[in-house]
Image 1 (cartoon, rainbow, N blue to C red):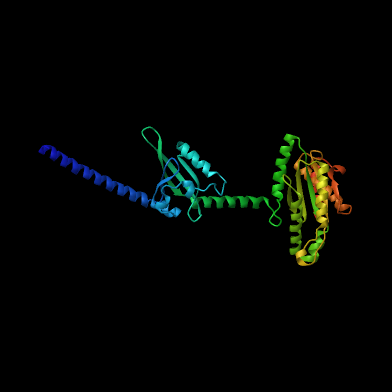
Image 2 (cartoon, rainbow, N blue to C red; image 1 turned 180 degrees about the horizontal axis):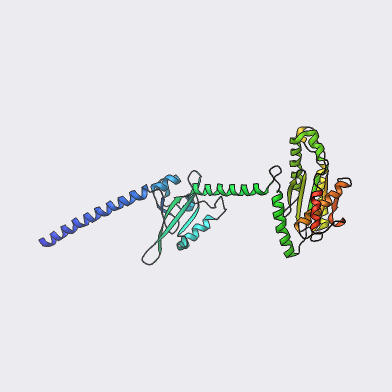
Length: 349
C-alpha cells in the first residue's frame, strides 16, 4: 500500500475512534439523563413486549431490568381492568399497538409488583422504519396517583356535601329542600308525559307520649326506626322525606290514587306491626295516619297538592287517628286558598 494511502487510513481510523468515543459519551450522557429523570421511560415492541425501562420506572414498579425485558406489559405492569372504572385495559393496549397514532397520550391504571395500583399519564411516540412499519413505541410516563386520589377525594366530598344539602341528618331520608325541588321537577315531567303521581303525608299518632315517657333521645331513635320502615317500603323511583318532627312524605311517581292508597296501607301496617326501642328492653307500639293527594286529579301545582295531602291527613287526625284519607274524597278547597290548610294542620298531637 502506498505511504499516502496508509497515512489516509490512519487518519480515518483516528477520526472513527474519535467519533465512536463521542457517540459513546453522548450515549452515556443521554442514558444518565434517562435514568435520573423523575419519569418513566419505556420502550416496547409491536407485540407489547418490554425492550427497556429506565431506573425510575424500575424503582416505581419494583422490577429489575432483566425481569422486564422480553415480558409483555400486560403480564407485568398493566392490569386486565381498572379497579375504579372497570375499563378493559387488555383491549386498550391491543388497540394502542394496532393504532398508536390514536394514543399520543393516555392515562390509565397500572400495577406495581407489590400489587399497588398506580395511575400513570403516558405520552407515546411510535418509532417506524423507512417503510413506515412500526418498530417500537417510546413511552414516557408521569405518576399521577396522588393527583387522581386527591381528585377522587374531592369528588367524594362534593357528593357528600350535595347529599348533606338534600338529606335529613337524623333519618338519612331526603329533606324538605329536596321535596320541593323534586316535586317541581316531577310536576314538569308529568305535565309533559301525562303521567300521574301521588304523595303520602304520614304522621305518627300520639308520638308526644313516647317522648314524654321515654325521653327525647329515645324519641329520636323511634323516628330513625320508622324512617327505616318507610325506606324499606318504597322502591325506585319512589322516594321518602323526613318532613317535620314525626311527619314523613312519600312521593310515588307513576301511581294514581288507588295504588297509592294500597302503598299507604302497606306502610301503615308495617308501622303498626313493629315493636320500637327493642334495644332498650322496653318496647313501644305506634300507629300512623296518612293523607293522600294525586296529580293531576286533585291538583296541578305543588303548593295545592301538598296542602290537600296535609288536609287529608288532618281529617284523619280529627276523626280518630290511625286511618287513611284521600284528598279526592274530601270536600276540600281547590286553588291557591288550599295552601292555607297546610298551616292549619301543624302542631297535631
